[in-house]
Length: 534
Image (cartoon, rainbow, N blue to C red; front, top):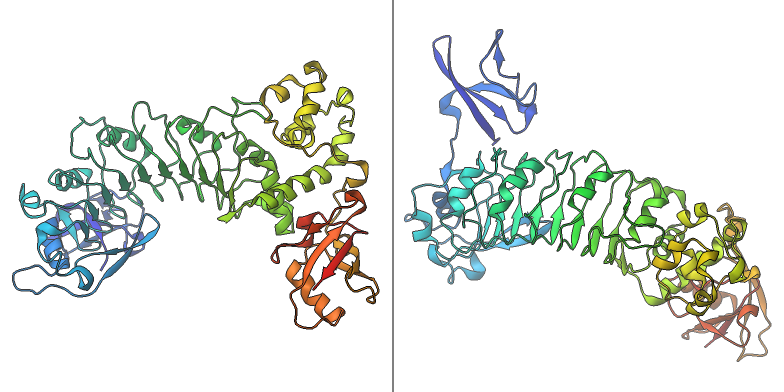
């Protein structure tokens, strides 16, 4: 069964035909033109067809679909089983079947309703829904034959406490001017309009009628430009614009002042850069004041400068950024993750993986070492009075000074000795200090030779065991190191405890306590000594 929209009724060569435009244009044959005469217009040049009226299904009313789906017609018994469907990115089990057949055997007891793909095309008789289904709160109306927002409003106007509505995959006509505010959607919190061909201007025309809306899903609608939502969508907490090819990243500035927006989903939107021009190096932007979770997967972001910009977001805690060109600049995924963590100071979750305090500390320490030589070359200095890195360096590494200089060191530096905005804006909470000369790491090519660490293996509680020198890849996990040591030292089946000591940490041991982390996570370097106990 394929869906289409009736465009016109024509008499051609003495016979009545329906001109239709298919939702799937591959089903069509033309643009509404037959033998040189255009009978109707199509959005797609080959999306139209003529069909005989007796071949068309003009759909059913909402209540008829509910009765049929839930087996509550007079001639039918209660339907058995469950239905799973994808709503708002989550699999939801809709009711009406075995698990709650007794509780919801009557229409007026139904709360969650799914009539997905039930050929719903109109509301039915006035007030019939409100008389029959008084307790509905959540409706899935996706992939039906609804052709206008008016039809949706006619259904919703009979549902007093509607909270969740999914009308995705219905090609609809929306208001082209501002609509009068009514109470139809006064309690609506979640709305999905994916694949409905709605434009952003139409969203704004409808939005005054959604005064309590918290989640809005608008994926795959060919939205390219945005406008500032003045006095509407002010309650919105989640906005999903995935699979709309936005004109550029600056479009985001137009929605940047939604006061309660906590989650923004921008997967595959074509953006190539992100910039918050109201804030300088290390400052926090006034844009997206409440944004905690951001998804920018599958885009065209190629420069690390866009990742630097994300540190300006005052509330950002979670980031998804897979499949962007900038990620190809680092071949080692662990190093890539460390760089992102170090560049965004308040981040707690990266690509759905929690950032533990130890991981953040390791990432920031390594970042401080890796770019230490660049810092010195750009005018950095261990003497606070002479520490004047260039604007170019600060633009590339906005957090570097806050990672290297503790509060006490900042307090000794004259404001005039560095760019003023660095002092005014940078979060001064770290206390790593500037990297020592021996700590500086060059940005070497990722050859196998450059990734090998020469380490001494010692067993401090087994003096008869002679120290062994081994070359190990810095990406080798602690778990694999333990496996190697079991074989190398011929240790019986005991639980190994590993730590390491370094000449830079005289008198201290660092425990290697996470089997899933690589050696580089702990900042182990050439010449360090791994201590083995069992």
